[in-house]
Length: 366
Ligand SMILES: Nc1ncnc2c1ncn2[C@@H]1O[C@H](COP(=O)(O)OP(=O)(O)OP(=O)(O)O)[C@@H](O)[C@H]1O
Image (cartoon, rainbow, N blue to C red; front, side, top):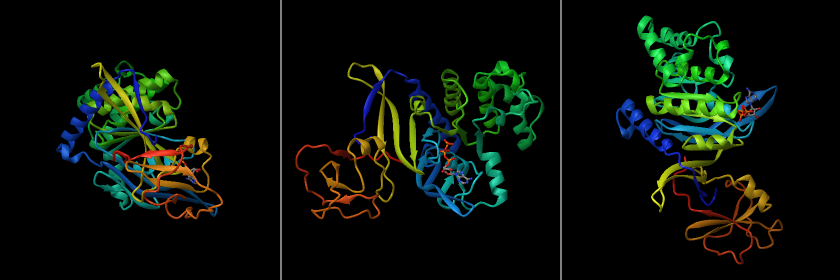
């Protein structure tokens, strides 16, 4: 994480090709490549739930930027705040404080009418529970046609043709005349994706869309998500607690305790032998105030506790276990920097004992 760990994986260059196509389509939809940046922006997002006098801080200053045409996965342990983010972004819930913006919609300050418009026209949504996504008494094609009828009054041949196109795009054209109980879980979820994009939304949110599926079927649903992303240029955010999805998308953001903690980016590059390979790089995410979370594995490995010593090196920052006794006076207490005590700008730490070493981030963090 801190050293962007670079691992060469077997070639899956289609990820790069699909992302390129998604970016082109998204730029065409938005009216130019200069309009890609920051389709979804969360800045210092806070959500506090109050139940029976008890406050739960589900999000504590979450920062996230997703560009138009991106396919992003949000991962995190149970209770880390993933669904809370998605509910806010999809207009189902309202944050307590901070900034949450999707396109031109400010999600903190929307009239009920504008919120309804946002939810009908701007976003599509897929839930984990297959039964929640489709009406059981309609066929797959009728399910896809329904949102078009409700929003645009589109019916007859035009609605049918568009529904068939979408079902075929996600690989379940053969299920057009089947009701949900005549389809497998994976087929239902792919049909649900077609329903979710029926009204041509700019963004698609999916909350654990593969949570009830086995690995192979889950991979088919992810392939359908990638196809929708590439063919329609829809910006997609998928929430999951399955870290294995990192291999299925180009960017994965990890949330811990209601904050973005780290992210993994995958990109294709041509190696010295001329063969294209996919490279994964993992970064810690720095917020606007300079705060970051150390990965739990680093904290455990060095038994870091209470306060740590930081040294600024020419091209990286060094993190060392701090003395609990503070006999040298360098531990300056918690303050606003996540409990880190700093020890000057150029004091080189002696010896080569165990220390966490944080290379300068290449400025790609969200
Ligand atoms: N409506 C609510 N009322 C009170 N607390 C809530 C509510 N919704 C979420 N929380 C709390 O907020 C925190 C984050 O919940 P959230 O559902 O966003 O986590 P998650 O990462 O999606 O978890 P999971 O993977 O289990 O769905 C948890 O502590 C949860 O108990």
